[in-house]
Structures are given as C-alpha cells and as structure tokens.
Length: 217
Image 1 (cartoon, helix red, strand yellow):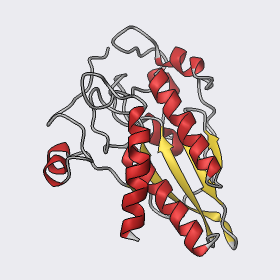
Image 2 (image 1 turned 90 degrees about the horizontal axis):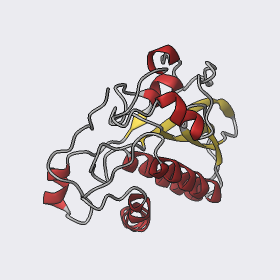
Image 3 (image 1 turned 90 degrees about the vertical axis):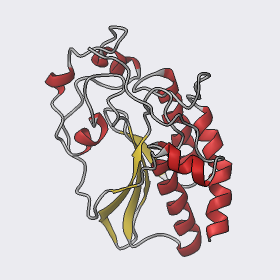
Image 4 (image 1 turned 180 degrees about the vertical axis):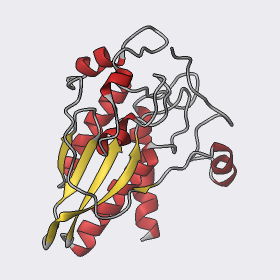
C-alpha cells in the first residue's frame, strides 16, 4: 500500500504543482486568479475521470463525491485548501486535497462503494493571501461567511473580490444555502513546514524557509 501511494503521489503531485508554478520559486495560486481557476477545473476533471460525482459550490469549493450504499445521507468529508501564499510550497494546502482524493480512489478500488458517502473537498481559500479575509472556503461550507464583509474588499491591485468572483462564473453574493450535514469531522491534511520536508526528502518540498501574504487593502 505504501508503494502504491508513493507512486501515486510522485505521479500526480508534479502535475498539480505545475499549475501556478512561480518562476521566482514555489507556487503562487491566489484566490480567483487564472492559476487558481485552472487548478480547480483540472482537479475536477481528474476526479470525474476517477468515477466521482463532481461539483462546485457558489464560492468555488470543489467537491468529489462517492455516494454511500446504505447511509448516503451521512457524509465523511476530507480535503484541504487549494490556494497558496506567494511562493508557497507544493505541500501546503493542495497536498491535503490531493491526498484525500488518492485515498478515496484507493479505497474505492480496494473495497468498492462505501456504506456512507465520502467526499473530497478542494477548498477555494484559506490563506488570506490575496484579500484581507481568511477561510472564505470553509466559512461558506458551514454558512458562517457574511458576504457584506467582503463585498468591497480589494486586493493589492485594487481588484474587488466580488468582481473576480463573477468573472470566475460564480455568483456574488453566494446563495446562503447550507450543504447537508457532515457526519464525521473534517479531516484536513496540511503539510506546510518546508524546512522539515527539505530535510527529509528534497523531491517533495519546493519552498523558501518562510513565505507570507501579499499586501492587501
């Protein structure tokens, strides 16, 4: 099993990391940027090809769903965020979403359909690296986001979140419709300590020792 996952990671991580690769180092994939949009679309395609039902919610959170055979209304959700800071590492955020998908794909191939529904989520945003607001993805999953708080916020280039949201073919304000309850805690795999990963396996890490947010207003 370990060999299987090692091979799967080595095959898919470079592909995912190539979308938003920054010529100055690491990855830069800011919320609603062309790189962010391409990543979510390509990830959606890969999950659909693996047999998952895929969809976006109103803010761009991406879901891949494998319906349960006995308790389909009970949902186990696993994943992480897909956005990055400027020059971010290729394990922070995206690896959690990728790992959740690879694990679900292996479970499906090994054991067949689950008793309970299992979903992979590639969350739209966590970092606050483009706008002065964090957890836009997860707050909308749980109905905690207030659109009025972000209606007029802008990035460092004076581009409004609301405008970029619509440009990505997402409604603003998002509809305040809660998803069905999640039966198990959100399993979130985030590996962001680049120095540790460089020390253990330089093939996996691609980041400077510290990376941070861009200036926003």
